Length: 88
Image (cartoon, rainbow, N blue to C red):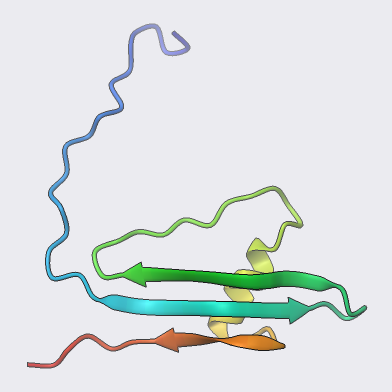
């Protein structure tokens, strides 16, 4: 009703094929300068053909998560794996 008509949210997309794990984040934990936990055992997998969005209110750890993936944030535990596609 906000746009004056019914909005159809069902978008037909093809399913990704030959998906492979590309980014694996396993139980990462980070502390801030004061020693408070800013990321606590965060885990997820991003596969080829997927789009991963990180959302939340300001100060909930999105920046620290992205800095960790980029190698700018020191991890106190866990690991981040960057996987190359299979070569043929």
